[in-house]
Length: 146
Image: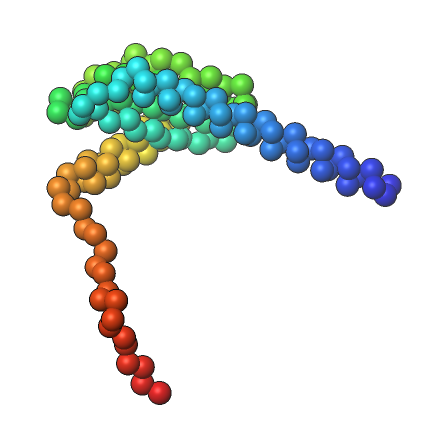
């Protein structure tokens, strides 16, 4: 058992990498499709992930910021790379009652993460000023004590 084990291990790693990239591409395409469909002024797209022992859930929510309401929701649930994003009409409605409409533990965790992302996004968007870094005068030099 010489080079065969290393070749099999290397092949398994390459296959794992390729399948992971394929899964990430499918997720990115589903997020981009939601952005194209629901793009508009005052709308925010937030995502959240809830992990379990065997299965996980990713939620993607489009929120109308002024109305504080989920206008579109999609849920990616599964344990393999073959999980696909499906519409989740049960998650549409007021943001205040979103957690009660979760249905299961992993979806609840994903909603918690999405809501914390929503809070951070609202705080970032709420800042009206842009803080540019201060420039140092080009001729200024600093004295260093020896």
